[in-house]
Image (cartoon, rainbow, N blue to C red; front, side, top):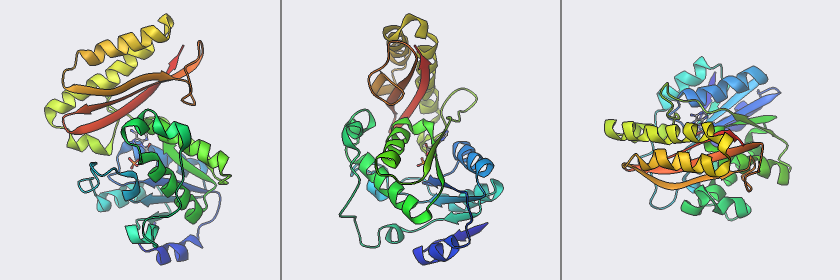
Length: 274
Ligand code: AMP
């Protein structure tokens, strides 16, 4: 496995990458969820490129950029175990050599609902860095987690709308044995927070299991579980279609939640069959 830092080192190493090339973009603090993306890329592709970059553009002014966990040595060990060929861990100046970009990608109407309603600049930051990484790495396929379902939906749509030439692959959410979705932000949870946070995944699975009663039953059952957890402050609980449009009367839908537990904001979602 080759590890490079600067943009020049990456450009030189990129020449040795042969196709099909799989790209796994991450912000580091890697866990078993990221490992599943790396494994999917390893299974599909001849070369696997992972990036480790905490992208300032996707953090709002009051968000956790400065305290975001950084664990590069452990991240490299995980990439090595997962059979990654090339890791690029650039600095901010390597990704944004001209400073803050003048031209960014607008997520459109899907960027201002759900997560976008609470984090108004987030998805423009995500889409801009993902478009840049796809332009720099030129992968055949890029891998993203269903854990960040709205992000995945927007990236898929961007790849189509802007003809980026990379296939976008969604990988199912990896969970703790008790159901909590793995997240780099789980390290912020105190033991009490961790217990309370379980209500998030429990609400989603209870909602999914109530699907025979239709959309209103799904939402009622999930809200009741969340209402029983006083330490969980819900930002939204919504049922939508698979592309995040209105939920269908019948067929696949997505139940999405965001909530604050202590000082930590967590998101999760599940597929629901209406
Ligand atoms: P991040 O480092 O948080 O930006 O995440 C990098 C990628 O890993 C994103 O595509 C996430 O959706 C994905 N990811 C994060 N947590 C999980 C998880 N628990 N299961 C599957 N994928 C995940």
